[in-house]
Length: 524
Image (cartoon, rainbow, N blue to C red; front, side, top):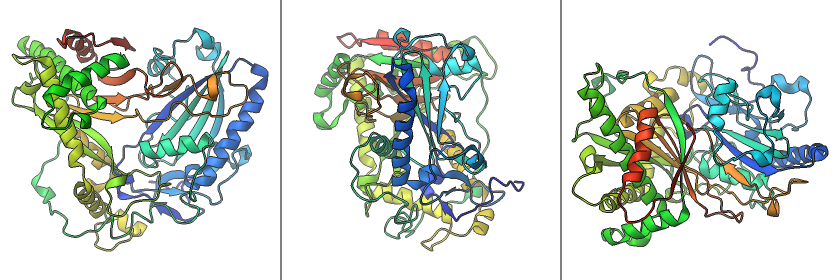
């Protein structure tokens, strides 16, 4: 990579952990939406938001930093940041080192927006499609969904989008910097909740806890001969358009689903099977039934390059599990970096298809498989996973991160982009796999304290994650009840081939469960 003055470190670089290195190069973006009728009070609200953001980055100075290559010509990433952090209200002349973390945006006719706040059905509004049609991937956030490997990217940003009668706050977090639990902590701090302990980065360098032998102990790492495997791109069977759709299920219907699974879950105590397990099982079954029908139909019509699914093929359902409680040496409560593992439930395709068995019995079987996969992410699993990632990213038995010159000699299969690609190869999300992330625990009833917001208790009226990360993605979204608390209806954001998406809705409605699944669909 050519020398770029933006990349020239003016302060020491702090290398990200092995888990952070393997995260996809994307921004996680969330919308917190408030009624704000008093236009003349916007300046007071902006000042308040800047002060709250300042308090947040003073807790974690790394959030004001930049994610950038640790050495010229490599994809190994680090964070460059100031401690103490810069002021949010710094002048434009300072932006060549760090773009504004805070930005304002006016949603008006010039941007194709002609709606008043009270006229927008935010639950059903397709933000992703609106951005696509306006050809502005940063309409609601100053950062696009994807950030290119090798570029210098801000760790976090906040954009205040003003519309007539309302305020849409878009928080964007680089995936290499924070995971779901970390984002939850950051949002709580931004809302002004008391925070015990000192912020990460104020008293120790990022990832110092992860570098300790008790967590990344390279004992007897499994030896693989990577030369045995010829890695090649998956066949590009079809040039299909992927679409996103939000499936809404009433709380009552999901409660009924969990109750219906109970009699079949004797192998696992009923209280250990969650609503998320049951909902995930139903989605997995219906997606695979839709894929089976479409591919069999196309294959029978003789379309070249398209293979029908086989009954004995293995379908995989990946889930992200918080590993903080399973570590031999717990990380501090203020650790916001990626600290999770991916666990996988598997089933043969024919186990997911409609047959002589009852639909509820099949959902129960798959829900139990999902729960067992989560059980499997125990301390030993987490230790082996972290140990192996540490081995990949350091390739040494020393308990420290090597210098930049060492990273330049690392094999290509170990770079962050290759780790993400390898995960996709194994999952095959376009054919038999699904990748599930649950954001159901994201805070939805926080009092942000924003002046002149008219929602009850200062909490947002809507909390949304309208952007999907990639094909084959299942995002279980934050839940917010009508009364403003958590625990409302369930929303699942899917991203699939359009024909598969249409089939999923049909398959869900065909289920014979003895009750109405309460399905509503939004999006294209």
